[in-house]
Image (cartoon, rainbow, N blue to C red; front, side, top):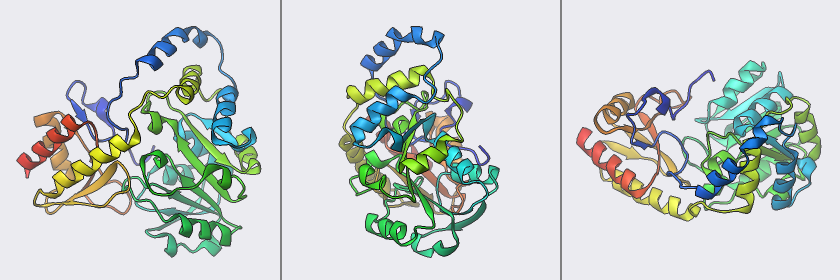
Length: 334
């Protein structure tokens, strides 16, 4: 982690009552999952499956793909580093602003990096690997799927990585997983951490053509996914106790509309439940400090995203009561 992340709630022990800095949706009561994990704590006395095989089989069945086209990882972040290692030394393009771990992982594995703001700008003829977050973090933008499909099909020499960690939180079209596994130059990232709001358990997976997955598996360590994460993943695939994504998206829309009425604050369009904001003439770090000290609210200062400036910050919609608290607090500061 070279660039740093949001959700630094651990730095403010006991101060935070509303956390908007992470793209995890509002707090979820999950009593059935908690009870299930409590009943399986005895499993911690044995090693987990080397490659989370039982969860991989369940995921493949649910997605309608071969097991050989799926790789379960310790969060989507492990998947990012595995891909960077598998393509070590590549000429790589990253669409920005975006999640910093793509760049960090590629630097560690000696990639030659180029950065672009629009897909159409990428010089694909000279690239081995391309990273596109879709929906994108931190903007919430979803890129046109027909454009992306055309890029992949016209450039078989280039491998494309599409991070669909937030794919469950948009009404826009993203890659269809079974169809995507037929391409030999396409990798999809997925995050159960994000989908089910379990960031502390670290659970993600890759889907791709079986040959790509086989190459990536050569780079991984055994037992990277702990036994409780595996059990949680299997439980969540069979038992849905989350709020529907539609509730989260509607609340995000309401929050955006409320913030748009505040003078001196620009709210950027989004296709998901989180979005970028920009202050007209005051830095986001000052707003962040005020919100923490005066209201116990945490936002994501977006200044360290490549391509953004110190006036930008990101928020993810939470529960209605928390969202109202944020709007009121920002009004008071501005």
